[in-house]
View: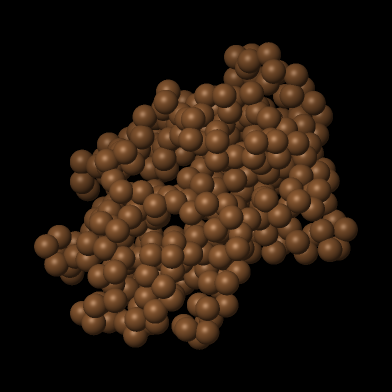
Length: 349
């Protein structure tokens, strides 16, 4: 196991083990009042499309350890599937979801326009980095406590650093035929945002050229990590840094590469539903997810810290040292439906 692996897994064990039942006595006054109301509700349901399954469950467990008597029902899926599930609930007049976390910014903004969201400002959000606070809704109907960092990855045993593609544009070169793995914008909000940005940079002809290299297309942006680990492909495309670093920490022969034409950063909102069956538990969950405790737990799985009082994950390059490209909410909302259709026309799925 690499030094990163040993240190990362030891850190994960220490951080996750640090949460202990009965911590309610240490809560801040604004949390104590919410906790009393949330405990009467006893649970909340989280439609989670941002983190992968393992950190989602770790967050749910750590939340309950901090707030005994309030259980998190984690419903993990891709962001598009999570939103489809919520839309089906709304059409059926069923209220199951308390908090929706999606990598597709348009989900929260459209729900807000339709009057579907509960307005709430977590007090703990005051500790978030300035650009993160600004990425949320100015009227406090949704907030950002997760950003996706999407780049390239390679299998070390098949592609050397000297041979590796250094840009998104390089992926269209014929030598990468049958070596690429990528998610699907119809399922992953992050892949939708990535496709919107690449279309903006190079036009849709870029994707027509990419299709000629016959990429293996999964659903989630996380799927290429599994594909590379299995040895089915050599290059992961628009792959999330957190899932890749966690895989590396567990001994898989992968390396990250920050594209010269821009690392894709996707701010991803979370929102409380107006019909939430457990509104106080949902508010308490939003307080937790904007707190330092939440970022200590998710950092153990190599997710970005969005607070100055929690350091970035080990092995990640500070974002101020790389070229970053980030879609605007308007670009995502207008562009993602378009690229979904173009993707199906071009790739046939």
